Structures are given as C-alpha cells and as structure tokens.
Length: 383
Image (cartoon, rainbow, N blue to C red; front, side, top):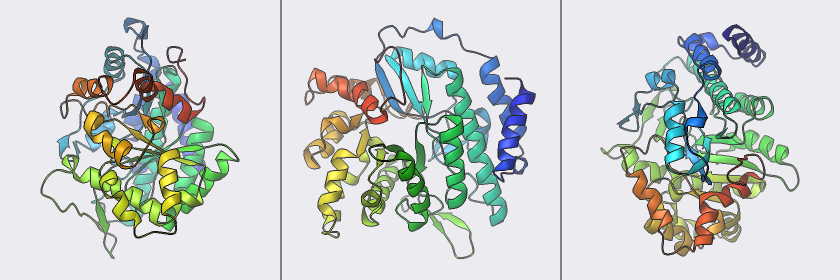
C-alpha cells in the first residue's frame, strides 16, 4: 500500500479512537516501516518449508523504531529483527507458522515520563503503531505469521477500544498482556472490562486467547511515578520473569478472573515460570475455588516450551500439577532467546524428550496450537 494511503487509513482510525500519534516523534518513521513491509518483500521461495509442520506460539517482532526506543530488554541488549531473518530461522527449525506478539514492555515504554497525561497519550499511540505493524506483517505473509494484539493497559477503556480494533478490523487472533501494567496485575478488577468484552466476543462455546508475557515488576507511587521494584540485583530475565509469571497466574486465580470468564484461554510463557512450584501452597489460601482453578489449569491454560522447559522443567507441569500433554505448546521466544540459551538444544530437549511419545511430541509441536486457535491460524504444511 502506498505510504500516503496507509498514513491516511492509520491516521483516520487513530483520530476516530482519540489516539494522538503525533505524541510520538517517530510516528512517521513507524508508518514508513509499515508501508515498507509490502514494498520490500522477502522472497519466501528461497526458504525450504516443504517438511515444516511446527507452530511457534511464542515469537516477537521488533520494528527498528521500537528497538531504538527500548535498547535494553530486561537487562540484555534488545536483539535486531527482520522478516528475512525470522523466516530463515523458521525454515531451519521446520517451523511452518509463527504467532507474533510484541515483547516487553509492549506499549508501556514510558515509565520515566512524569507527565501522566502525556504518558497515557504515548502509551495509546505506541500500542496502535505496534498493532498496525504486526497486522501488516501478517497481511503480507499470511501463511507464515499470525499475531496477538498489544494493549495500552492500564488505561482500561482505551484498552477495550484498541482490542476491538485489532480483533475486528486488523485481524489479530488474540490479545497479549504483560504480567503487570504499571504495577497492576491482570486479576485487578480494573481489567474486568477487557475480560468482559473478550468473554462476550467468544460467545457460547467459543474462546478468546490471552497471552501472558513477563515484564519488569513495577510499583506506581501515589504521585504517579513508576519505579522498578525488582528485588534482586540480577537482571530480570534470569529469574524475576518467572516469579512475575507466577504472580500473574496467582492474580487471575485469587481474584476469580479464571472462573468469572470461562471462555478465556490463557497462553502462559516459559512453562508457567515459577508457578508449578508454588501452586499447591498458593491454593491452600483459596479453598473455595481451588478445585475449579486446578480444572482451569488443566483445560484452559496452555503452556509454552520457550526456554529450558524440556525435558526437566516441564515435569513441574505434567508431574507436579497434572497438566495433560494436550495443554503444552511449542515456543522459541525468537529472537530474544538467541544468544541467551541454546535454541537448538532447547528444541532438541522437546524433540528428544523420553517422557513423550512420538505422537505426543507432534501434539506439542503443532497439533495443540491448532486446537487452541480453532481455525484462526492455518498453514498448508501443518494441515
């Protein structure tokens, strides 16, 4: 699409939804990069997908302008990313399709902005530009990519508006949220409006997918300032992310989110992080919902393999929590995992896992993802 038409369409939708894109100095650069996705095409015929069947449910696009905004990701340099590199990785790893969601901090990239109204404007604008980028990427390469919308949480009404636009007009196949947004966890009652919208959209017998990804722990002070509350001197990717994941699951359990909204299915990162280790002790505090929560963990939660999950960490899910193989999905965390862990070894940990049969491995590698999204993602190679 010519940049003039693209800019007009994006600007019109933003104006309609009361989003001020000009609050971001890089807005025009972002629009140009979105337009370039369809003009600077990567030739997919140069990659071999003939025997690719895997569905990678945990990957992250990183537009150059987002990387420039967020040069550090949880204590490590934010990696570079481009379409060609991602497709090459998929081809090498026999991945037919990848589900994209922008990683931390998503639209919450302005914690040092002390003007709260300006911080809100920037957050709304960034969420919109990130979603427009992901949508265009998937429009250009529909067989290879699907995407999950990011939100401008904790601005709750505006988050519903953004999610409606992303799902109804841009074609997102779900929603991605962080373990906390400006210090508020997803079980907070303020999130209920978003969950109610998704529950209603799912309808009877349907489902909507919510991907929970870890981020830095934050505290919002009474004067509106945000401070990082990481208790450890170690960077968050080494441990705090996994505690954050446990906090988020605990939050939506303790506040009855998972019981109030039974048509929401929760895609959880990194094998549920630290939650399997604390789940039984945690549920002692909620005897009235503990059995219903355990049932939800086994039927409406889907746990990915990104990181060193197989063959050992996964036992906390399967042996510790009794999670069936039907709820495990494949994920690589591309490109953030590259250089942090040995991605080849991680994938081999699943491919060679003695605790799974060949049929069960196929379920984890792609069949369970197809079941989760129920026709919303499709590839020729993965059936």
